Image (cartoon, rainbow, N blue to C red; front, side, top):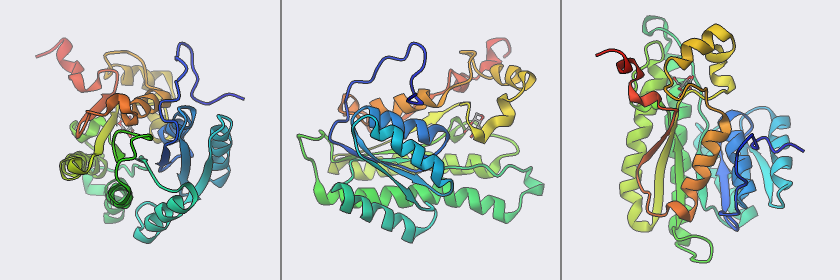
Length: 279
Ligand code: BGC
């Protein structure tokens, strides 16, 4: 069976998350899927959240189980308070607790400002920003209740906010998305400041252009891909596993002193590549 995360040159992950319980939202495709699998490969038990597409969630679960850890799929819309509350409550029942929350679920509804409906604006803010608030809140309640268990981890819990280079790069035609990710940056930093005294680590991972369904138009043809590569100094489009591995190491105790920061995993997209020859 292919693991979905193994690629040429990728080192095999040691079990740096053995005994930990993780929940990944939006885990049946793209970055969330690769992340859920990588966390399982690193020894964590994993809840595979999805909002639609049960079969793909089941496939991810089977792949995670092949590493000898536990996993199950859970359908929930992260923008709905009751569904997020129920999802975390069930996880505590099934797995005993939660150690790692990866608030990954996100979407785009692109339009020029003058064409953008309130529904398009609201949907993106609801899922990308309110969804992360709800997931972080429910995880933090359990982290605080349980506290640090030194045999499991040096911290009482880890929250990873899946952000984007667009938390700092303005993006014409995507104001709802860019505003949501700008919000995620301040959500993450404020929660990190608030929760650090409880030994809870909150950080963000900010992907650049990663080959997933969300941005298919940007890489699907050779012309589109060539344009995209002009924005990436490292001159390759990212793969979901690039993000999955960053998340896995970030939530492990190897990164125990990393609190309230953003790890950009973007091939240098945030280096203002236009200035390499201009300015
Ligand atoms: C967006 C992608 C885009 C990338 C770089 C991501 O956050 O979801 O559609 O390709 O940023 O611009």
